[in-house]
Structures are given as structure tokens and as C-alpha cells.
Length: 349
Image 1: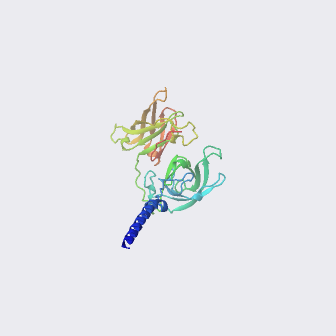
Image 2 (image 1 turned 60 degrees about the vertical axis):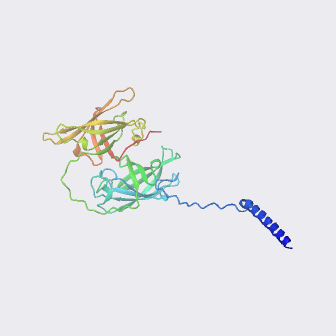
Image 3 (image 1 turned 90 degrees about the horizontal axis):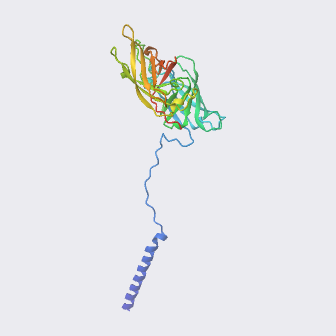
């Protein structure tokens, strides 16, 4: 009897062991393994990432003032600001104010205001490459009315937001009106709330020669290059008989169309860096009455080097513009340069 019980126990143990082995090998098929949880974090939104086909949105503030003595301003763009069809228009809110600083070249000129914060509405229309309304949209024309000059009546201002150069962090635009500001930059901001500060009483007039990076409107002569002149403290020597130096950059424009205000924003040649001599002209008292800038540019093709000389009066300059008389080549032309933050023209396609 005891022998049967032992034999039965052994048989049961063998049976259970066989069942356990079956379950062990069958487990991956009966119960697929549960994958381990991998902690993930949601992608952080990037202000510079613009979804393809969607123009920038947000609140943007202009760097510096509009035109020579125009207002500071900001623009608020939403998805509804952009028209959905070529024959439609959109709208955006524009905020503008008069800065406390009179010098428009002051990078902090718009950090405070001497007037109320004013609002107006801008109209947005799609801008295509060329006159064909069915061509792809390359930007949006923004039109609004602000006092282009201080204490003047509002007048029409128009700029074109360039889609291929703008992001949700920064807008780049061409100014169509008022003339004299070929390119501007808007930076994204959380709010526009410059504090009010009254302007200080007028100080004695002191002639400060122009300093900064100045982009020539158009080209030197009809077939000449585009030009940038950089003036700084080394450009204006103090001692009688001393000469200053200035940096010069030049390149062949993207095209030769004199009606194209953006032709110098792209190039068809390498950028050439050279140095110019700055020679002051003094009156009998030793005061500087003019500065003459002279330099030589390398030849284009089989031509000869281009000698360039122009002069300007430091007492008659606008804060963000350099006006000069071209002495060589002797065409009798007047030159107008606009102050820019930087310029790095990309190659034309």
C-alpha cells in the first residue's frame, strides 16, 4: 500500500514538472512581454520654428525707429492677420510711440517713450514674386498710417515681410515707404510697455560725425558694385594732418535693375574687403568742415581697378543716414547711405 502511494507521488511530481516546462516555453506566446515604460518629455516649442506654409505669428518690436525720425513701433500678427486668398486682405494691430532718445542710432532709443502708446490697424495683402497674382506668395505687404516724422500728421507706411527670411522669433522686412530704410528687423517680444520719460532739455549742439555701418542706396555708378562703409573712432583722427581709416565691403548686386530696392541684398560675386583713407578738411580755425573717403576696388573682369572718392559734411548728417558727394568717378552724383545693424548678402540663386 505504501509502495503505491510513493509511486503515485513520483508520477504526480513528474507530471507537474512536465506541465511547468510546457508553460515556461509557451509563456512568450501565451502572454507577450510588456515593454518597459520609457520616460518621455513633450517637445519644447521653439519660437524659431515656423511650420511649413504658415507665416510667423506673435508680437514683434522694430529694432530702432522707422525712417530717420519716425516712431518706434511694434506689430501683433495672428493667424487671422494673413488673408487666405489673393483677393482678400488681413489686418494686424500696430503700436507706435515717440522715443525719449533723439538719436535714432542709439540701440536703446526705443526703450523709453516721450509720448503715449498709440494704436492703429495695418492691412496685410499677399505679395508674389513678380506681377503674376497666381505666382507663389513670397511675403506679405503691410500698410498702415503713422507720423513718419515727429510732430507731423500720419502718413502711409508700407513694408513687406519676407517669408523666407522670417521666423516666429524674428521678422525681416523691406521698407517700401517711407524711402531710405531698405531693410528692417523685428524681434519677438512678450509685451510692449516702454516707460514714459520726458525728454531732457536741449543741450548745446555738438557735431558728432557719423559712426556705424552704412549701406549705399543703389550702386557706385550704373555698372558699379554695391557698397558698405564702416566708420568708427579710428575714422576720425584728432591731430592736425592725421588721417583716419574706414572699412569698405563691396560686391556685385543680384541684378542691375535700378528699380529693384533689394538688388544689393543678394550678390553675384564674392564680397571684397578693403580699407579706405579718411582725410579731414579744416578751415582756418582748425575745425573740420568735411571728410574725404578714398579707396580702390579690384577690377571686374578685364577692367581697371575702380578708384572711388566721396566727401561728406559731418554737420549736416541725419542720425541714421550718411549723405555724401561723389568725387570719383566724376559723375556729379549724390550718394545716400543707410545705417544698418549688419549686412551679409547671400549669393543669388
